[in-house]
Length: 363
Image 1 (cartoon, rainbow, N blue to C red):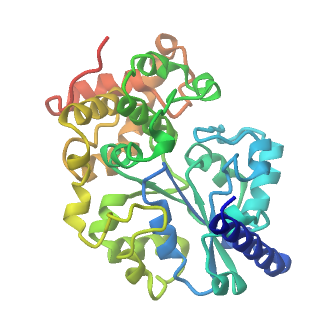
Image 2 (image 1 turned 45 degrees about the vertical axis):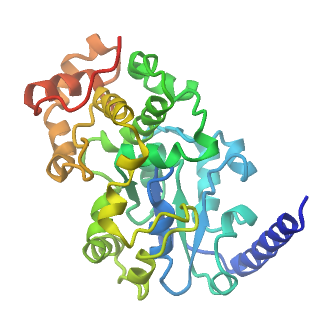
C-alpha cells in the first residue's frame, strides 16, 4: 500500500468518525434531498450545487454494495427494481438509516470537506442505483420530491466507455431485473458491442421511472436543460423542495464535479453538449440510438438535446394508452400495471413518430 493510498484511507476514516459524532443528534427523513440518475449522468455535479446550502453535506452512493456492506446485504445492485407497493421490510430498515444520515463510512462521506461535515444538518443523498426504487421510496417514506437526472444516452455511453469499469460492460441486465421485466429479453439478447450493452443498461436503468404512469412522485430533470439554463432549473428544483436556491449554487455549476474528467469543463456549455460526437464513431452513435429506439424512448436523437415536448408529454401519452396496454396483456404476457410496455410503445411510436433516426438492431 502506497503512502498516498494510506493517507487517503486515514483521511476517509477520520471524516467518517467526525460525521458519525455529529450524527448523534439525528437527522429527519423529511430533510433529506434525494438525487438519482444513471452513472455519468451528472448526479455528483447536481449534488455539489445542492450542497452549497449551509449545513448540507453529500451522502455519496450509500447503495454501493462493494463499499457499503448493508447495501449488499439487502441485495442492492445497479438495476435493482422494487414494485411501488411491494413489502420489503429489510429494505425499509436499510433506507431509513440512509435517509436519517446513519449510514456513514469513508466511502459515503469522504467527498465532503471537514468543515462541511462538522456543520451538517441535512444530507443530499446521491444515488446511481436508485432509479428503479424511486416509486417504492416515495410510497414508503415522507421524503421531499426526488430528482431523477437524465442525460442523453450517447453522452452517458461516451463518458462510460472511457473508464475501465465499463470497458467490458458484460450483461446489460441482471437475472433479477430480467425476471421483473422479461419482455425486454428479446432486445437484450441482440446486443453485441460494448456501446450497445451500455445503451441497454441506460434503458433498463431509466425505463421504470420514465415509463411509470402519472402522477410522478419524483421530478424528471434533463441534464441538458440544467446545463443550458441552470438558474431557472435550480429555482424549479428547490421550489419543489420548498427551499430557496442556496447562495453559491451557480458558482458550483461552473466547476466540474470531482468524479468527472480533468478535460471536461461544463463552463463551455455548447462544446460540452456535443462532446460525445467527437468520442463516438458514427456507427457507434447509430447503434446506441437503435437500442434506445428499440426500448421505446422517442425523445432522443442524434441532436444534443432531447425533444423536450415529447419528454414532457411522455407520461401523459402513456396514460392515454393504458387501456390499450390492458387489451394486449395476453399478447405480451405481462401485467399492464407494470411501467414498461415496449411492444405497445413501439407500435404506437411507429404510428405517430417522425421518420426513423437510427438503424434497427440486427436480427
